[in-house]
Length: 159
Length: 161
Image (tube, rainbow over all chains, first blue to last red; front, side, top):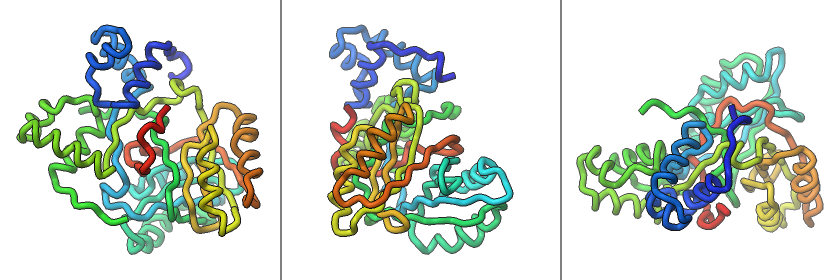
């Protein structure tokens, strides 16, 4: 799906304008780029429909009361890593889950409101997942950079 | 990191805008039964408090960078902040966190070719003064990724170029 979608310079310049201001109107973007509002609108829709673009508000972890951010690396034993990752991804505390190369098999981003949630996450939730040999937590104490404008894009949820 | 005071209206606004930021204030106001002025004021406050930011998220085919790597870094404790800042300047690095655990810095890279990851990220991090050890792992399959909830750092504006 991603390989046959072609973008040109006009698409890229529209995206650039949207990155600067996602709330700019089609007319404002059109005026800046010397296009018509109709072109801007149809280009945006085409990229959205191909799941290559979302113009959204991103919100900070703290807006949701999340104060603890951890990376958790997992060593898997006796089961396919992607199966274990899929099961772990179902927990709402797991914000991202990837099967990775290297010393560990799975890399996850885990987000909590506070550390008091950790015992139940480990003892009631993760402990039920078969195939976890060991877990290595790394706690984020300060975020220096966090770029959020490139990501795998999921299908749009039905409104 | 304290929890900001958000009411139901703020949360409804965040929910609507996180799905599509291009909805007009007028439509949001009508849907939520408030005035356009209220919507405008709330959005402005949420932006000023860095609780939301508007952006265009692009899929990997628009960015030309298709793969994700996690780079764990062991750096001299006294130099960790400086090292983290230097890593953040490298071209393929999208996120940098100072951490506690096996590594004291975690960097995330979005890259196109393995060779570039090694030459422009891993090797360059290793050559920074104060860095002892670098360990890179590459995501081969992504099961979940929530791009809507992020850390909005103070320098995010203008960092999109």
